[in-house]
Image (cartoon, rainbow, N blue to C red):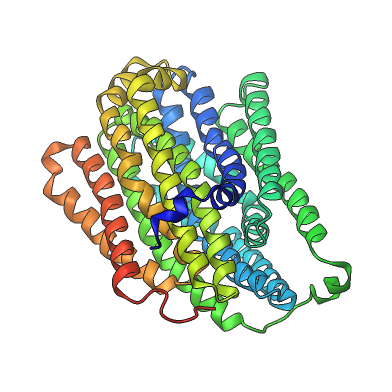
Length: 441
């Protein structure tokens, strides 16, 4: 990477934290939505309400995260344009990304019925869980246009290192979502329908705010360039393709955990839902440093500054590790109490506590892969991310197959092993494949 002497340079730490901390703060509000959904639904009378929301939310999350390349590619390419002070490139990427988002959202709405039915058929679960999962997903899918455009606009803000603007966007949107969640589910007693409707309404409110914040970033004399511009679209499509394949493998592994849990019974899928919500909290927090790496690495590459890029990787890795250790300590000391906050169903609590040690381990084995995802996004190295994920996903299913007799413990072993493989493959490429040998912009 770079000399450890950089770790003694406080200005370098300050800049990294100035970008990372706002994103950590705002990112942790995103899984709080899932935690609030789980908490309000988890205190209803039956287990299948929680299982239904878990499966329905997993389906929508899978669909939207598969399209997460809209944010990632936008961030990397805008950051490189920002490093070169090239406004036409930044605006071309923004406009092309928004057009892609609207096109993909339209396709999702057109094929929603067979898509959702096929997903539920693949996942399985009890009749009650499938019923409420479909009810939840059929409402959430109508937030697709706003949700996907928000990904592009967030990527634009992050690529320009506007961490505070991105923070306020996510905090305001998620706070509004939480308030609506409590109001519609508890106040109006809409149950599963209320939880889904709250998220859709919040998505469109977030879109309005995101458009406002992004428009303010564009200098007046460049706003006329916010028109259809196809320059560089080939590079954007290629990067989107590779990141999509990477995201597909990632989401298949995550979905497999939920699907296998559903096949083990309602209590297991509900307990796994509680724990997976905590893994999302971990991921979103660690992604704060990944986002910092995306923006700074992309800018350094755009400016053709190799030492700066290496410095960023070193600093972000150290701070990611510190954060991971803190998370493991919290779950080790207070995991049982945190589970109790999300559900008072005895069978769900008992199962979640049984598998809690895997949650304690997870931050320690995963923080490196989260960080290096950010490094490769900033460098626009989609192919490396894709190849790493293909190898790691193969390892995940091999681990699961070898440990099926461990039942849900085997599933969690495979999930943690998956994170280890991602970290190893990304680091090996970083060190052995001349990552910084040429300008990557």
